[in-house]
Image (cartoon, rainbow, N blue to C red; front, side, top):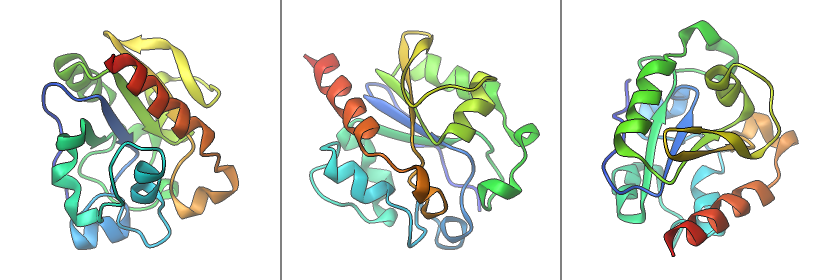
Length: 164
């Protein structure tokens, strides 16, 4: 199942994943895997007022949040999605069009597929138009060994400071 982009003007941040996971594809909702901590993390770092359910993904623009993937039309684990499946040009054009304060990659693999090089977690020196780029530890349960919420906190702080 292809999930729609959640993009519109005046967003604070657009989160970009690799591709829709199997569970997300089955239920038709972003980050629906039982071990994925995306929704709880948004609430913990203050980007949403409560933990939203995956099926509520369409209300994210109320909180200034958008969603998309680099490999639109595919689903499955990151291991099954090839970098050659990434469609980076449309992503860049979407970010330039909607101009959020930040584009945030949910995982280094996705960021590497877009940026074309290795990087550290956190705010990057590069931008997409006027949008800052953040690389965050993946919320996928399969990536739990790399988890560090401090980078998500830094994104939240950046967005709050950019809003003032």
